[in-house]
Image 1: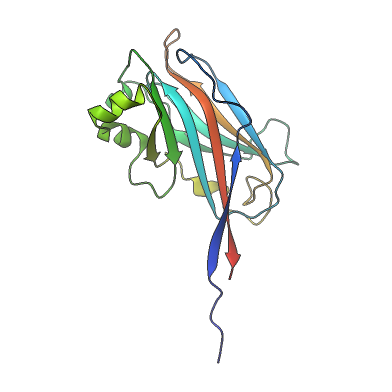
Image 2: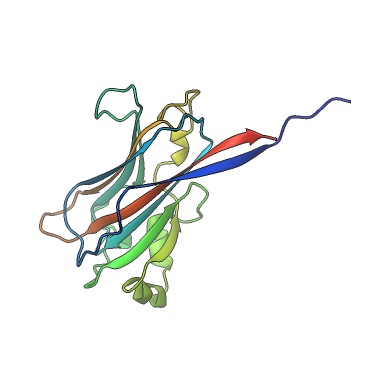
Length: 195
């Protein structure tokens, strides 16, 4: 009797940005880069990114993840995935709250809704709750996180985990406007194990 192909189960490892959640009165308006260094040499099958944000307004804000392999050119990303592209005058991102919303966004390729759709679907009760405590939203990124999975190497950007993973929060809108502040982020990398 011939044996069939081995089934693969995913083993996931979570990496956290090394900081404490900051106590901040309001978001601020500039570029933020927060890095996670991954030393594990694993070929990855799936990527999930979780961000904790203070949000006054999403209009004109770009969120992205860059990977820099350990042997790559210093400061030059191997690959970039855009979680939320900079959009100006898009009604989905125009809500402007006097008190910032506390949003924990889990970015997954298998999510049903984009960030704009997820925000639009939020009930008034959830919006009110997000002004006091973190509310979780699951959103599909604008660019697939699967771009990080393609390749045959154990290095970041070529199908692997090892390297520097950077989350960027960039305000591309008008100056002197309060938008988004990154409080923390986590990276979950999953690999397949034959059973």
